[in-house]
Length: 126
Length: 381
Image 1 (cartoon, rainbow over the protein chains, first blue to last red):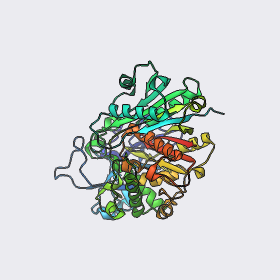
Image 2: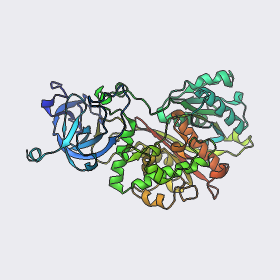
Image 3: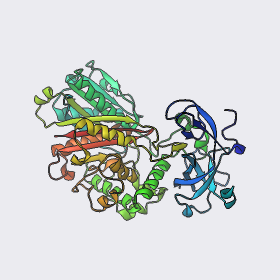
Image 4: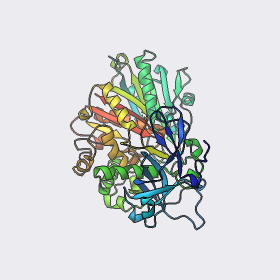
């Protein structure tokens, strides 16, 4: 791997198996289906929400590190990308009651786990 | 044609919180199972057992008697009991032994299990960002299932309501107070759409079985139950499991589907022939989904079946007649054998206030656990 898998500039740096074209994120050296070598692949970061839940109580610390303002309930889910892989992400939505399966989301890799935000019109047309 | 294996003795302890150690609970269950079978410990020719976090089963010989018996430790997560059972079946079928003990026990600290990301091959950010929480997985799996197959929150509440009602009828259960569906829905959201009272809790308990060859079983007085199949499977590509940073696209595969199909094939009967069953119900949604994954109904049919009372003790397909994990708690190593104990008692007609009417002849058990393992049995009298 030449690119850091979580580099923000890289979008979603996953991997794809040449043999069975299975895409994964984060990148892995081996294909989880056939065990063959997987190659780095830039995954499209836009997708739709496959499923989700809300973490209603503060997870045990450690390992959990609450944000500076203290714990607030947050949503987590899986975003289904065009490549056919569903990526676990914290959902950055303003209204937890407005979350729906199928809503368009864009996944960003950063310092922590992937984070997904509602896809904007500009992102959709790009 | 594989040789018959018969369950001649079965016992469990009370589940829940206990002053006793996991090992002490195990010794108590083993002695009760031997008494139930009418067999003395020195007659046992092989033993298999384990716990997830309460010690090694082979150390039980210090209390049971130092007979020199081959005693193999099993550690296979939620499938620990099922794996011990399969080992026992193979010991009898192969001719290694004609009397075998299978024992499962556990004792967990209060509160949710405490997984570490590094033990799961994940980066530390999955812990620091709050994704190492098992209940999230259960919430997300049933959320998608409800979306695809029209299951409602009220159905999830009815599953838990039944569990507590059956728990009241089970002397060894932990939760023995009925809770209404309304109270369950109002008990506070844990991981949407699952509320607090829809979940089981880690606890303490033990269960033990005495397996015999047909020749030995004929010399015993008590009623025996045939263990027609015991099957274990691990996940295949495409399954949706706890702590997955990604899930493959397409319809998810199911290890429970694979293990149950293998068990039914080995038994030579189908899901439609089953009179009573115990399914992994870590939470309400799991029971709903496992009904379909084990072939007992079609996807989506649960909404109607549960509304009609089909899964009640008096229904056409009684599920978790002892209250399941929701009412008994989940001592991981003991859970699978607790299910088999319950079916054995039902088939013997010894289930007391929770006896399924009509003299059930066939039963099925199913456990499922991380990181994608399932063990199933088919029993008949």
